[in-house]
Image (tube, rainbow, N blue to C red; front, side, top):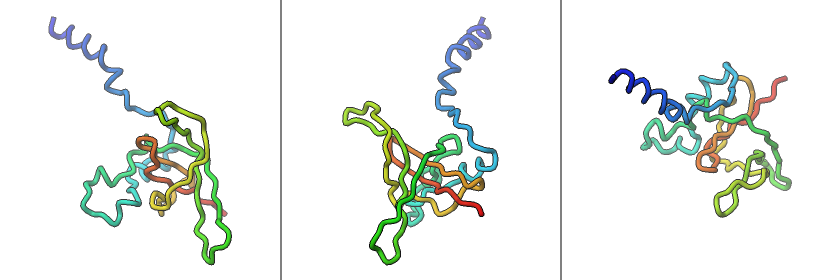
Length: 136
């Protein structure tokens, strides 16, 4: 009877165990890179633990539409990066998609092995942005 109850309990609650499982299909070539990626804004601060320094896992990386804008007038202009993501209304409900500027401290120096651009979002905030890499 205990065994049957255990199986029933497992089957009943197993969907909740995997509720955080993402279906984002990241190419095999990028998985290890994305899984070990460190947040660029943490690099100056070594007091944080390993988990806090991480962008997250490869399952949290989202392929993203992006654009790069080079501001005019600067002697050595740094490009500004924008990603196409969903905005939220003040009450927390989803809004429409729009271009959102990536804060410079959130841009990862490294490129993914495939050259694909990715963004990590936590709490509607950009945590990491992996720029695309052009191949010649």
